Length: 226
Image (cartoon, rainbow, N blue to C red):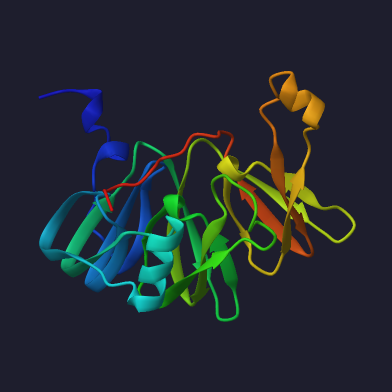
């Protein structure tokens, strides 16, 4: 049988070491002897012996998730073998966290991560009175690898005290969690009365770090119902 689909770039090779890697730009492979944690519903295939179960997020994060609508509906992927993960054909990227690192990620962009990482749901500072998306993020800490998704090639924008960054909340993937955040309204009442510009307010970032944006305001939405 002959077809371009059988090209070596499309063929899953036997894993040579444990861990989370890119199968290709829109799919992540985890070679597991134990457990990885993934967003519910994003497993697309596996070989080996695995059990997939809903994962408790701890009482604190469970309460926050139901109160805020944010967080990650998690599943435990436990066993031995290889598992493939993908979500709506989104672009996939790997991030390695070291001890002392702290990364704030929108829960809708979490794909899979190693259990050596932990996260807490935190509110974006200054966003209490603002109505919109992306106001509660998952702050990851620890040492390990995290796979995230982006609708299109992401943009990483450096932030400094002298040069703050402003971002649409729907385009936000994440940021270095040490940044100061606030909400800035950029549309006048007169503009709103005339139909609006579509850009009511943005999240302002100040400090030393970076912001990760996707070139889209597309929302993947929840993988499963709550």
